[in-house]
Image: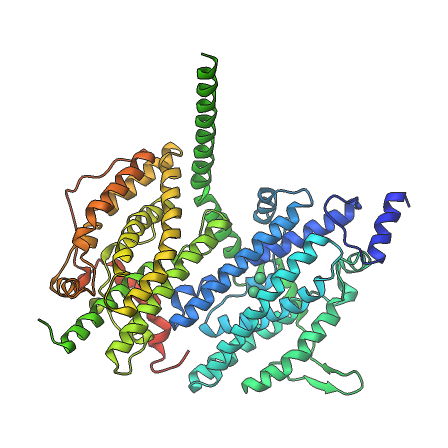
Length: 321
Length: 256
Ligand SMILES: [Fe+2]
Ligand SMILES: [Fe+2]
């Protein structure tokens, strides 16, 4: 190991954060860029399924809550793009990578938000699963990412509570409303479990990320936390658990659960979800529609700069005269 | 002279109008969320939409209080049909492109600042209190729409062209903002409502100044459309309400 590498590993081992100006192995930088930009893209693409419901929210209070949530998510995207930029990549480059498919976003957003109940299920389960992961990332080794996670987690727990409260309202409502809640739970439960990624034994990036303390807990451990916390929440809603194999295991101190349909997981990641194409196409379409606005902004700023320079030149000419 | 009861009924209708304006425009602005030209604008639009939805809730909440017949903010938003909505037409026009939305916003924001400044003086304490909250938001909205219209107008040839087209298409809907009917006259006389007919001169001064800086042409006043206050709407509103109300109306009597 070079002295730089030694110093880097010492920091990792003693839980000292790595900061943007510090030396870091190229693979560490690449790994972080991949992970944080993927996280940023997920926040941004995630505004599509939920944004889809803003205009149809069935009460003004819920509409305001949903608007505020979607806005928070876009804000998370913004922080995370900034955090990634500290690693020497521009937002334009990241967006280009998203649009050409070389960067990914969370596959959960390839599932359609079909009903109003899905807005509740997404807040409760998708944000809920995200929090479990992100709480653990508050201790990630890269300083800007860890700090972004601390800020983001506070808002995510609001989202989860609001999503759960929406479900509760449905479950306390009419039989149709309760059926809507059950249906949404059934469709989003398993995809939420898949958000933690493949089993540790199958995960391509896990081992190295753990060694560098980019990841702090394994996929399966995080998933177990989520499974455990969700059982009581489902019970309290009075809904049926979608996993018929769910069963408390006294010896492990955890719930045993049924196996995830990994074929579905890989199928959706590989383009067979209901919304894969639309999500990306929407992003590209909006980006292209906005190009004249971005060009106008740049042109205006250029003109202003030229005017300022001209004014200064006139002033100094006058002074000479 | 109006009786106490007539005055209350008139105030109720007036408040509902203002609620409809806020809801319908808030809906239009919210359509920009996930559709903005860049992420910062998505967030900014979300903010403005949120302000308008909040404003609609304050007006509707007060209308519900005045009606005192079990109706709520959601009854007004979700269970009335097109002919019962009394928003100004300018608010229901589609979102169009980014230039269209910003130009509409500029015309409405200048108006809102003038209007709310007057409504602050209302003898109706609730309306005055709503105005006090709303005007802070509208000052921020105006700063934004003003900046955008100037940047787009004085940006590229394309952005200038788009702005001018938008301005020409929207202009005829701006006159309605300054029209008074019997109800509004009564309330203005009673010191509760705003005499909007007196706002246009100030409005025009500000418009001229901004358009000049934006290198845009002030359109001629050779056409105008109105009728929103009487429920005489464009075809756009029906579709807007269809979307807004679909879930609520599909499950009558439910809590959300
Ligand atoms: Fe988020
Ligand atoms: Fe969230």
